[in-house]
Length: 109
Length: 112
Image (cartoon, rainbow over all chains, first blue to last red; front, side):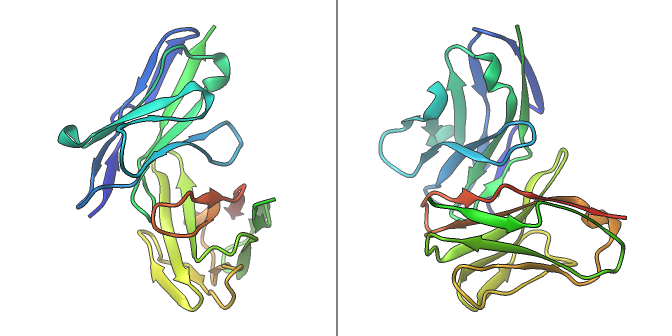
């Protein structure tokens, strides 16, 4: 069965600091992998996705993610966080989108 | 403009009063799905549809029904709503496979 684990429920970082959000998945084949962001009171916006090819994926808003098959991971990174990045982040796997439980990011000025 | 449109966006209803949340997409997508979002639980799939007249249960289908009579519409039906169905609901659509899934803006449903 497909599943996604986001180990961190809540992360607080300072503006300008680097960020890495962890995502581990369970999937029977080469997965489709996604990161979505949800700002307070808003819908879901796709940050980036991985289907195949280059394991480093670049997304919108300066985010990137790296697919590591050996670790069943698809961690999201950003070199320098902005206050507007405060939101909830969801990792998802598969064509039918199985979501993790989400991770809330707080950014301190 | 590519859109997934849900209605109503906000609704307060009473236990047992049947309600329907509509979902419509203008992208000719085959795949459509409904999710509910609850704090600490992420998004959980209720039902999905691979095409017209083809629907299947997701992870939390109890208390919900769906239909797919036309490609563009995928309504979510709560025959007898209960307070534990108070949640934020999202409709989504795509061309299937690993194609980008588009989400509606969400429907806040409160059952009292």
